[in-house]
Length: 151
Image (cartoon, rainbow, N blue to C red; front, side, top):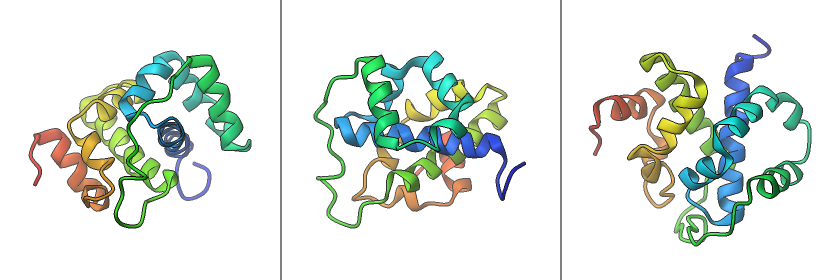
């Protein structure tokens, strides 16, 4: 453990924040970003997140965009927002907590849990900045994922 959170938590936080950053930059759904990056790249990002975190996020995202060949999309949840837009760090924290909860509850790797989180029916709710689902408590979001029940 380093600081308030574990290295694992910090690495997942950075990875999820980077996914959101890339999604905003390319106007892609976050599940499409995850698919384009693929399991191997995501595993590498998680593993080296402390190194990537010390670099400019624009440069890091450009490097992975070029490597993955992700084209621009049309999903622009930032421009569609009517209210204050949470930062990519804010959304990264929401996904990080969900990923960790899935990994622990379903006994899967962090990479597998990340794919499950971003491909779940909750992902569009988290990415809807006109809604309030991303403000729900981490426990409530995980419960919704595990039970398939949410308002």
